[in-house]
Length: 427
Ligand code: HEM
Image (tube, rainbow, N blue to C red):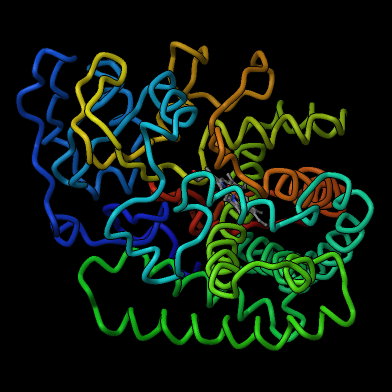
């Protein structure tokens, strides 16, 4: 995304920018009587979108210490911040549906697997076949990721000290990987970056801004055309891509289009952001960087700690299907929830000294890749392209990589969080 993490409220997908004022559209009813089933959620009227955008973590600390669930007027939904409550939601799709009503994501991208419940969801998920699985990554993708990495690391080096780690390297590298994973042999990595940004902007277009819809529609049409062109080509000459597998499957074209658009929106920014955040954290913690250099197995540990520490998808939506109680808090049927992974991953009930980036902490499962039936289908691809390929090669080729002391790095966002600026230097 060219302007990821712009000041936001919430989008139904997990992250598009929504000006605070627009989040008030279609207001839900604030918590009232509980009929004795659980307590009413406290109202966090002190939470503001700009504060969340700048640094959500002190806000999450306060929220978690007060209650696992709050009604947050600024985002017009309940925010769930404890590890236990987020985990409970992920494991129970009968009570917590992914198929949110009035979803702008469906309007922008179509009805993808991410907004379907089972059994419909599983049909779409199975249609992705083996493309994103560990065996295919090992046999096929790792070599391609390594070649892509060589190219984009070369471009960073050619740009010279002062280059931006995110926009001159991590973004094109991860976009090019995703282009090939999807099978868009008729498109460029720049197309993927543009599609991703504009489609995600559409999913957050609560203001009904016609310009945003127009750009999303152009991208949507471009993706449809690219898919239409590639399906017959790949049916004749298959490869390991998603579109190649889909070309020989009895899956409606409508579902193929929606799933690919969702994957373009969700499979590009997250590896980009986790790559930059991990390297940023290591450069700021030289003793941990030294340990990683001395033991290459620790690249994977640093990656996982980074996804825990700053969840690239900080929040995603769910909707209650029935009246019920979550961690002692009453929720009426039809309540809109934000599952705040960024807060759950720093819950002190689970992680000791949770605010610290610490690759030596005891290993415990984080929620950064979601869980339950929607557990991220790209987890292994993300680990491979970032921890296995990019990080070792990067520190090997630029051993004296440093944050540029003359230009500050910026980390921002809460629905999506990552580095928006990260000038680096060497030599
Ligand atoms: C570090 C990188 C990544 C993180 C942190 C991440 C995180 C997530 C999360 C939290 C979800 C669940 C959202 C929800 O339940 O609403 C998800 C779903 C998904 N992700 Fe990822 N993701 C990453 C990389 C990728 C990549 C690289 C791809 C594809 C190439 C991908 C494809 C998907 C798909 C297809 C789903 C939908 C799964 C389903 O509905 O069954 N992700 N991801």
